Image (cartoon, rainbow, N blue to C red; front, side, top):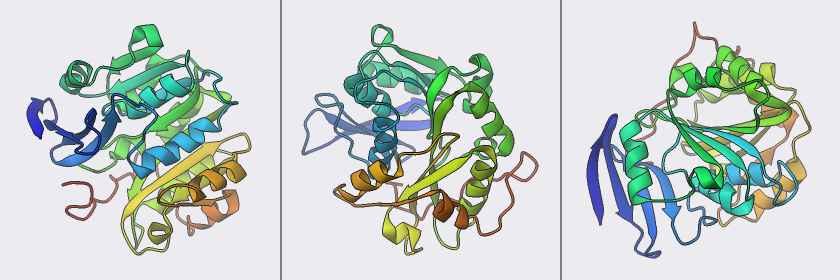
Length: 277
């Protein structure tokens, strides 16, 4: 059963999971944005969220608090996970839609300021100017508008701003949507490759092989990324994924130029019905 609520940027609907009574999927204009289990915040239903969580799990030793910036709020799934797995983490969630924030806080209560969670209502890229240099160990980009990544968070100038707020050993991880003939991913790899010393990519084999459109998780850092650990975790997932190291990831740029504010475009629209549309 779902309930539709008009928020600032569409119609939000919460659909109850029939197999997990205290679990809900947040839809925005019919596109699945988040899944939350109020009884078990460590349960991550969506494959791409589990892959981002693998990066977070390996960003520091177990249970060590992290300073995390989530660009794109949804229902705060990953923030809930990190509050449970790394108590004491200082987390900031940036969400453009104030009415959506209110709905999630009311209907899907979770971590709050006492748990180290701060909610900022702002546009993702513009929000980066609010934070001091080196403020975060992990920056997660999961921003979608109409099931597409907005152009302003795909560029070299955006990543310059991300780098400013990242600690020297920090990790940036982005959820991207694309598929063959790859209008989007090569440019994103080229852009991240110019910004960071090391890259890694996590995705399902059939997505990497161009057989379907899907999520690809791209990580960048100036430190060595934990590729062996990511590989083990991704292989053990209920829907196994592949992890590409720096050289294999950069090879997928296929000679593309880095994306700039002058050349940026949103990610391609996914096929109808792919993400609950």
